[in-house]
Length: 198
Image (cartoon, rainbow, N blue to C red):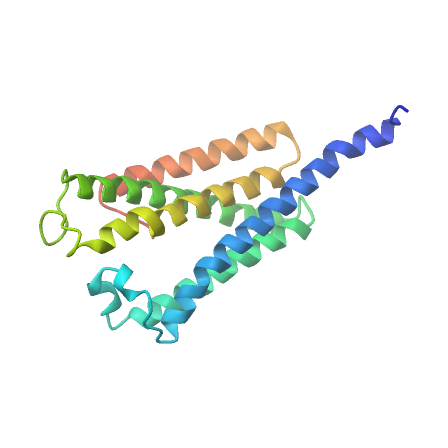
């Protein structure tokens, strides 16, 4: 039995909606999963601090840093859900897309730069703050490489996918990919000259 013309028109729209739903929930789950340890540390939790650079967890601003991170990550997660149900071509949708492309650029470039930087430290190409890499003394470098920096990269990619799925037309998708790519490149270049945004 052949599908009618309206059915054929509905199929791509249903595919886009399904993709957008998956992307939105992926951003939500990934963001909230990373928010939970920050919330725990903000509430003076001590488990897991050995994974971090000692100077960071000993900072007097440690709790405030984690409260701010918890808020940002919660907002990112809710943003993923919001985009699923948001009416397209509204002023709010364009405003949120601007936030998403910025988040994609910052998080992805932060993660890529961080993975590369930590890998070079482990290989001995770049020294740590206190000399050549030593696993006992600099375990935080390994945890950054394996856990924290990849989280940033994946968060940024998921935000990019979310915006891509939100776009209806091929031209919009191409523009979105261009904006994300340029943003990531700017983030990497600024990282190389010593400016990191996260």
